[in-house]
Image (cartoon, rainbow, N blue to C red):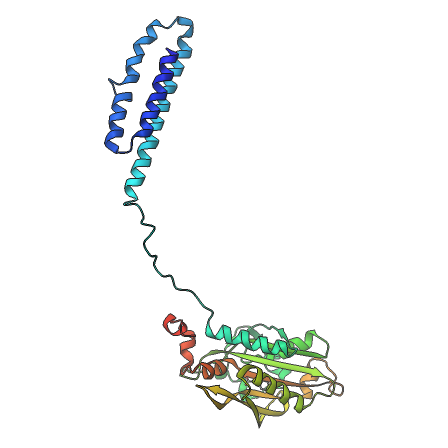
Length: 327
Ligand code: DAH
């Protein structure tokens, strides 16, 4: 009996393995597991098994039955899966082109600017975008009644905090944490409640520079800006300074750079600069008799827009892939 069962199990499984259609599978099931099937057919043989072997043989019979049933179910599921998967995949078909991503034009501009200043010996400093009035105004020598503090010109927040309006805040934070000499740039977002139009957005980016050492002069400042302009905008670039006023520098100037716009060099107004005001040094605990320094702050959107001929600042923030793909 045990030999018969073994034989039956082996052939049944082999036959099952060879089936592929669901009709053939059903035929197999009827022929082995059906009421008139081959498994049922061996049951009468139990009568001739000696009584002491009956439990073992009975157990084996059940085992074979379970094995065949399980094998059948698995095979049936497998066949169903292939049927659902539809026609086989034609691996020779050309695939769908999938777009390659790229860095945002502003991120690339920032990286390029940082790279140039890094080569000139500036390290990169960071500061928070949510600031207190000390770092955004007081320490920068902006008096309490200064119009720059107007609520209409700032995003004030609860707890005497505000979104920084300039990266000059990082000058203060760096000097508070470091002893001179130092040479840093700070890049980041600044916020002003401007009405959005082609040249204004309530958030934009600045790159701030600060160099503090003994006997720093306006010549060093102009040289640094000139070197940056040459390295970043090309050999025809130039720097022009126009007298101006900022509370944190004395003297102060506005910076224009001659950069290539649509193949031709043009003057573009980029920001402000000057010699660090002694009051700023005093605010951070530096001795103004010993230390001197220059500072500058440039608008990054201005640079990117002129360089790439982007007419509207809002396009930079709309995340329209058709626009961004061009750069
Ligand atoms: N913080 C100024 C602004 O946002 C720009 C500026 C001017 C930065 C002069 C400076 C500077 O570091 O020395 O308009």
